Image (tube, rainbow, N blue to C red; front, side, top):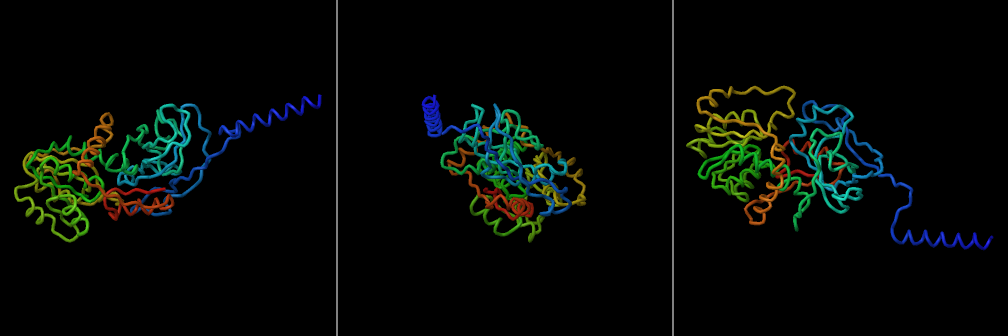
Length: 367
């Protein structure tokens, strides 16, 4: 009997050794601990570091249909400042990220693939990608696998080949309906969206005038991106500079900032001009809306068309925008710049710096 037991134990040990060599996991679950930023209180005026708290969260095991995604790059964007008023205290800070699938029980989302999703400011996420990114998110779009970008950085899926790129592509072409020979003005022109819009305008044969907040940004717009003129709103008289740059008036205006800058541009638009309203970064950190001139006289007498938009309106054409922008990059017609902040612990600094205009091009955080 003892010999049989001994033989059985030997066979069991050999079986366990084979399992170990094949790389199978034991039934013991390895818990993943995620880091995430949650709201301590809502922003009031300029965001403060104490408004957010970095905490840890034990994640559940991956179930059938789910994946575990590990963040590689996180996006910081102007819209986040405005959308956060809709989040209760204790929720995860909103935002999109490029994440790598490190565990999967969903055959459509295999391990090793990268996704873009609105998982928020968190290092790891367990989710069912065929439903929505996270229960914490306002943006309910489902994550998608990043198409093959070749030798380009995956971070571009958060910028020129992602939401900002599609914001420029659809927001300008669909709403402004630009025609060759026309003049377009872009505010916030050195940001991810504005710099992109100006280049699309040049591709389509328009005159592009950008408005930005420093001489170095203006120089970049003209010398590297091909803008016809760039106006430094901090040192120049916008009305006078615009009158000189566009003496016959402005046909299209892509508005990223709102406020007095936009009012000045709109009062210099031509009849039947078109205004695409993308954002209002000039007022995002204000507790009360700034006073400005009434727009109705300019809008009515010049019969202007003004339309606001959210880019997810074109979610059914998302890959179209990515593919077209990638084509222009490959052809050398579309240039981009990233401001990359290293370290998940520096999310707030990157976010607040972006709101202050410290970035050039797309602002991202590399984990």
